[in-house]
Length: 318
Ligand SMILES: [Ca+2]
Ligand SMILES: [Ca+2]
Image 1 (cartoon, rainbow, N blue to C red):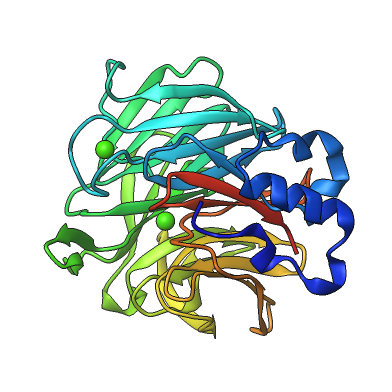
Image 2: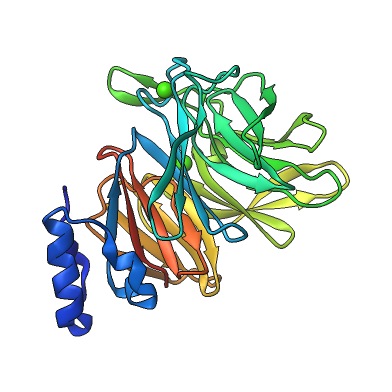
């Protein structure tokens, strides 16, 4: 347990109830707080049992969280990655729903995921893999040429469907992440065809990505920029637009909430709310290596995977 939950509890909202739960969490007690419904908003909760968790996705339809587990080096072709399912109470219901080790498919280092038309799409280094959401059946593994670190995916919508996916353009070297210059955004359609939307150093090692109306919002890992990419419907390509904000370095996960965008930063161990006007508010701190966050609008939670600690923490959504 790297972080004491109390460090993030605001003094003004700290009640006896939250104090009790926070102490319970610190002592490693079961996450009973989830059963108490709304109160969870004021009760940070941590779930253990992951292996280099990179991403959390919440599916409102089934009240399920999907956690991508890299299990090892972030670009290791080791076929041991897996995806864990949790119910809305934060209880693990299937540790290895998808499992590179046992499955007839490859799954090396799964990261960002998306649910599109009953399919589970996940980025995996140099492939985007697609599975049937109902039974976990492998449907496709799409190789994207020249990629080194496919990182986040988001439903694309439109006629062509599928997802947009970022390539952060790094590899893991002796000193950690080293640039490969492959920075890019691709589209993979429902016909499993990949096309380049935009490629270049101006993307600042793109990590988190979402669709927001007719444009994309992207979080740069190296640049620390939260910026827009304008899409040309005819050509399917994009151009970098405005920088909305520069909240902190090493940005990772990005989700959309009512008030704007929520983005995580490894550099500051924090999660920020960025309004469409670019105003930045820190909503949580002392989060070690907060990777690709998930937004759960039903229970009003942000799920934060702690990449280095093999845990997922739930914090109140703004
Ligand atoms: Ca792995
Ligand atoms: Ca990510």
